[in-house]
Image 1 (cartoon, rainbow, N blue to C red):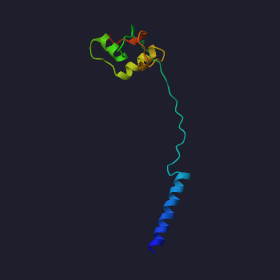
Image 2: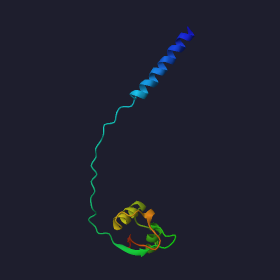
Image 3: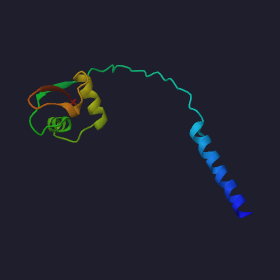
Image 4: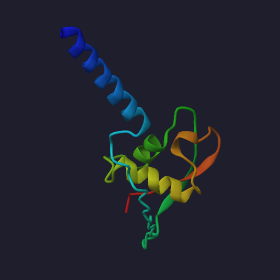
Length: 106
């Protein structure tokens, strides 16, 4: 009798695994289309131009310009930098090239 129930449980487990692999047990997620609305900032960004030296990062250049704690978030600095430099990522700045940096002095 134990062998019969053991075989029955084994068959049930095999059926469950096969069903899960073929059909899945999670509900299908309907493709959600979302519209991303990009609004341009109505305020012009003030900026300054600086040539990148070895060891410089966007954050250190902005910090050195301010000589004080940064009044905005790092995410906003990155976003503003990309907007000023036609999508150039802060991670991809090159030594010796000049870039526009957001100026938060005002």
